[in-house]
Length: 456
Image 1 (tube, helix red, strand yellow):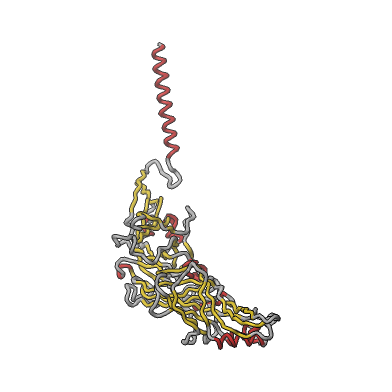
Image 2 (cartoon, one colour; image 1 turned 90 degrees about the vertical axis):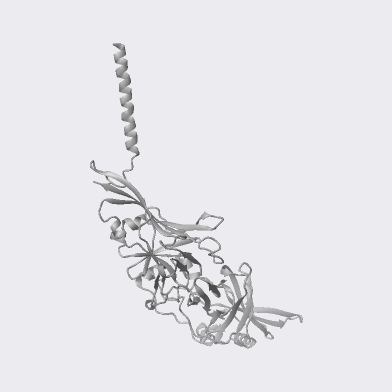
C-alpha cells in the first residue's frame, strides 16, 4: 500500500513539473507582433532580395546663406567632375569712427583677413588660388517661391534666402589674388587690397561721411565682395569663418613724437547675405547627362553606382516598387526591415573622406523632399558609418525601415527615399560619397526584411 502511495506521489510531482514547464515556455512566446488563432501556424522568413531601385538625383536648389562659413576652392573629382565654390558677402563701416582718429593720421594700407574655419574637403597638399572681386550689383534676396516648394521649405528653409545657384555680377578684374598652400588648422589668410580703395574708405571715415555711417549708402557705394577660386589649380574646397574683416591700417605721431600704428575694421554685414555658390562641370563623368531638366539618372547608366554630394545637390534616390505588395495579402507581418548601404574600401574614396552620418529624406511623387525620416520604433534618424574591415576600409551604413515598410500604404504611399548627408551639412559642406546599387556585386544597396507569414 505504501509503495502504491509513493508511486502516486512521484507521478503527481512529475505531472506538476511538466505543467510548470509548459507555463514557463508559454510565457516566453512573443505575443506583441501578431495574434495567432488555434488554426494558424507561424512561419518566420528572412529575405534581402526585395527589389530596390536606385538612381542619382539632382536637387534643384539648396539654401546656402548664413551658414557661418565661406566655402572657396576647386576640386577635380574623377567621379563627379570639376567642382568649384565661390562666396559672396557684404561689408560695413558703420562701426568705424573718426572720434578716436588723430587729426594727423595718414592711411598706410588695407588688407582682407580671412580666418580659417577648420573645414576643408579634398587634398590640401596642393596649392590653391583665390581672388577677391568687387560686386557690380547689390545683393537682393530672391523670392522663396521661385526656388522651393512648400514641402521642401519644411526641410530646408521657411524664409527668403540665397541658394547654392544664386549669383551676382562682379568686376572680373580682381582687387587681390593669392596662390597659397591651405593650412586649415592655422589662423588666417591676409590679402592686400588696392591702396586707392583703402584710402577712399579712410578719407570717408576721417571726413565723417554719411556714405560710411549709413549702411544703405555704403552698400550702394561698395556693393560687396565675392571670393573666387582659380580655374586650374587646387583640389580642395576650403572653409573660412564669416568673421571676415577688411582692416585699414594708419599711422600718426603721438604727443611725444613717436610714430604709432593703428587699424580700423570694416566687418561683414548681415551674415544672412553671405552665401556660397557652386559650379559643376560633369561632362567627362558618368553623370554627364544629369541637369535641372533631367534630374534623375538611373544606376544602370552609371556602372551600378550612385552618388551623393552636399552643396551640389546630388543625392541617391531609393525606391522600393513592390512595398505595398509585401503586406497586401493580410497574412504577412513585417518584424524587421533594414536598409543596408555598402561603400568602397580604400583607396577608392580618397582623398575625399566618407561622411560619418547620412540621413534619409522622404520625397513625394514629384521627388520633392518633405521630411527627414525617423524610425518610430527606435527613434533613429541617421545612418552611421560602420567599418566591416578596418584594414581595407570596407564599411556600410544601415537604417531600420520597419515603420516605413509597415505603414507604406497608409502613410508613405507613392513616396521614395533620398539618401544624403544631414541637412545642415547638405547646405554648408561639399562632403560626398559613392555608393552602389542592388546590382553592384562589390558595393550593394539592399533591403533585408524579416517577416512572419501566417499559414491558415
